Length: 475
Image (spheres, one colour):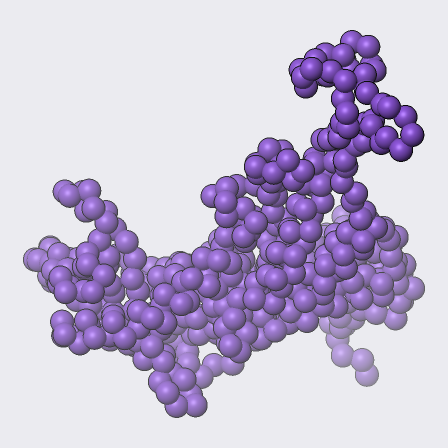
């Protein structure tokens, strides 16, 4: 990538990048419970009983409601608490892939779901470290600007990665621009927004002598040799739109109505007295007399004279506001395709069918996410197999089994298992048992128990757990 070409590319992609990041940062603010209602407080929820210069309306409370984080974390927990099972038709290879993905696989998958919900797409980067080990990590979506082909295949042609670094010599921030292709990565840096000072980072990568392993110099270019662009997008939906767009307006309505309600409650405590023909000399005297004698003096000539004391208060339409809050909250969970936790509180003994109905919208959203994530995860698995030297890495069949983490009626499920136990295999019972987390370990434990109970001289007992196969075929 030549300097002029990189300058043109940066300028050409800036508008799309800025638009994307504005959308992503807005989602992040709502995820952190910094809704628009708190803009005046720099994102912090605050109570302020005397925030406005208005005699009747002085309260200016601003408290945001974290519906967005609840909806996003619901899906992430529902979909990734138990990581998907990977099967490439080879048990030994399955184990090696699982080891390569590591113990943090489900946490990174969870982060990808959160990133995709907030940005519309999450990004994963993989590389081979100095010890020739396969590594991968999650890249903040705000750093990535993909460049796709314009045909129907929409092939990823290159990736621009831009992020900030601190210059320890000057104390100033500067931008690092990485340009990735399927062959190499070139790194540039700049401080000015128009990129007129763009230059290569000549000391970014170290160059080593292959035979001796000694460092021989530095370069701005890395030939990664992975054969693919080592960035994988995990899209949330077809148009890569963040979830917040579906219900942001509803959250804002709820915040406004709720805070208006709180403001009215504060303001109604301020009763304003209207004095007509007060017989005292000053308001200070009025306050003192009212406090000490609990009475005031009013000049009244009788007849149609309306001298006296009236009070000015604020009426609150409680029923109308409660109805609006309940309706808005229901719409947030409906269009956000989530579950209102109050639904479980109201029906703690719900049947299995009722629970499935509660999860129906969340399952719809999670199913869509799973569909897009499956293809992306296949790409990562194929990259791992390619690193392992598997000859058919890009053509081998891959099966993924995703799991769901949801509330269930264990008693009802246990009763169902008990009723069908005599017609089901040991494996099916172990998988369906609500108190079993690892069905394979459960089968092994059952076999161990039979061995301990009946000893090693009872082949029939062991045979029943091994599929009922006899040592000798039946004649």
